[in-house]
Amino acid sequence: MWYRKKTVYRALLLALTGVLAVILVFFGILAVVLPKPTESEAEKRTLASRPAFSWSALFDGSLARDYETFYADTFPFRDGFVRLASRIEDSYGIRYDDVRIVGSTPSDSDDETPARTTAAVTTSAAPDEPDTPSGSDGTTLPAHVTGEPTDPERPSATTAATTAATTAVATTAAPPEDIEPEKANGVLIYGTRAFEMFGGSENQKYRYAETVSAYADAFPDIDVYNIVVPSSVAFYLPEKYSSYVADEKANIDDIYGALGGNVIAVDAYSVLGQHTAEYIYFNTDHHWTGLGAYYAYTAFAGKAGFTPRAYADYEKRTIEGFTGTLATSTNDAKLLDNPDTVEYCLVPVETTVTRWEKGASSGSSSTVLAEYAKGGNAYGVYLHGDCPRIDIVNDENPGGDVVLVLKESYGNAFAPYLIPHYGKVIVLDERYFTGDLAALVESEGVDEIILINNVFAANTKNTTTRLNALLEG
Image 1 (cartoon, rainbow, N blue to C red):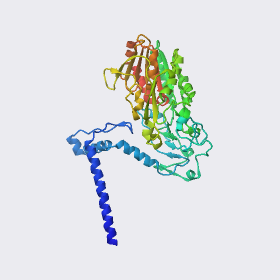
Image 2 (cartoon, rainbow, N blue to C red; image 1 turned 90 degrees about the vertical axis):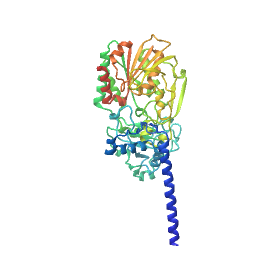
Image 3 (cartoon, one colour; image 1 turned 180 degrees about the vertical axis):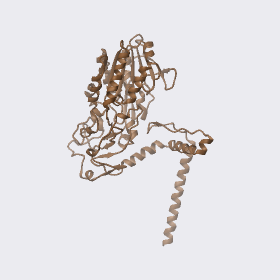
Image 4 (tube, rainbow, N blue to C red; image 1 turned 30 degrees about the vertical axis):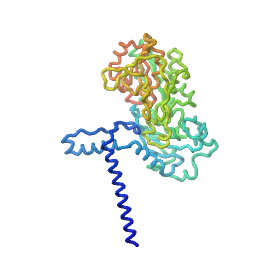
């Protein structure tokens, strides 16, 4: 009997070994013959490229290491496996008070990280919330925040089962009140919405104000506007987690209070605060939506002295399936399973557009909107993403005023609304534009300058450094 069991065991072991060998050979062949991807939509980054051969790299071992990285990065169906792993990871353990520490660092193409806090926390709303859900702390949130219905009469998310739990995915979870926030990277996820944790900077906010004021001093004959945009934290973070973050409104007020008298401050905070029941920020991404940017445009219009177009008058299109930076940086299954929708407005006038790519010495013909954008890159529909420069001429008013917009990625969704009101809109990305700003302002006959930054960028040294460098030439 024992001999028969041993024979069966060996047969099963050989069969499993054979299946594993077939799988490895199959994927090995696919890794060789399939086209190599260059970008990861799941992780929003450029993948490793095939390393160039050199004898020195061969003998010092770096060639083998680089090839290992290359094949790991371009493994067949890699993005699918990454997301599968996140779902498996998310299923482990029990969350304390429906909270877990995921220890993630948000992806940040804007290089704004110094103004964030460390606490990377995931909270899950109960699966039965109504259209106007309540957080476990009693905070009422708009329906689009969590995307999950719940009973408003349900008890706190802290149940006997969750209270007894102390271990969560990949780490030990402590109650929220036991987490000491610091000023570094962090994401808090509540239901199906993610928040970047804002830490602020007492020094940098005043340096930013000083830099913006310097623009008004350098161009005394030009109207200089400043728009500091709050993040979703300012409006949607449940009250029980407010101790993790700095006060964005107070920070913005301090910036505006320190601006020179020649700068015209635009209060985007107040107008956004009047529309928090609407879809003004993405759930899975750190940007605002096109609708959020629209409301800031109406606030700007009030300061600039023109009447904004009604949002209902725009022809609109949508892109489904947008999983943003906060979903891909945390790989949280709830975020990945509940993507955002990107709505954008078509430009209501005929335009002639010239766009400069990174590193290009001249521009080429383009469009305002990148309607080919999809999936994780859907926010790139606005101005084709982060280009160093894009010039948009209103063909129906070619002799109108010229406005120059200095921005990071938040400005992408804002700038298109300006087009009907100006003869020309020049958009410069402060991170990538390397030309002579003063010469451009003079040669283009710029009438107005708008500096628009999200609150994280306004509290970051890199932003003031870049803006100062442009001003100094």
